[in-house]
Length: 134
Image 1 (cartoon, rainbow, N blue to C red):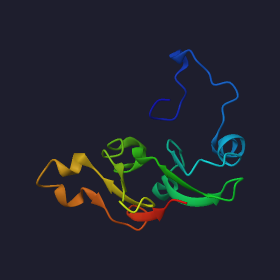
Image 2: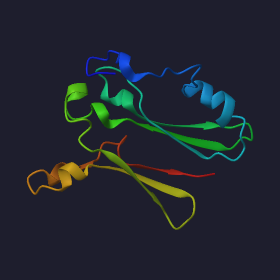
Image 3: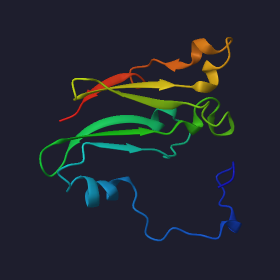
C-alpha cells in the first residue's frame, strides 16, 4: 500500500484466503485450552487512534481467560501521514507473583531528547494497566 491506501501493483503477491482476527479466534485460539495471551497489531480504522489500541478478555473452550491486546501505533503522532507511530511500543513486565502482567506504553523516539523526554510515556488508562493470567 502507498500512503494513500492504494495497492502497489508491482508487489507480485496476493493473499489467498487469509485468516483475519475473528477467524483466528474461532479456528485456533478459542478451541485451544492452553493459550492465555494473544497480541495483535496492524488494524486500520481511519481517523480513530483509539481504534488501534484495545484490550479484552474472553474465555476459551476450556473456560480459561484469554487476554487479548491489539496495539497498532503507526497512525499515532500525526495520523497516517505523520511520524509513523512516533516509535511507540508496549513493554510487558511479568511480576514475580507469576500471574500479574504490567503493561506500559513507551516511545524511545521521545525519550532520546531532553526536550521531548516528558512525552516518552503514555499514561492513559488504555496505555498503562495490569492484567492477570489464569
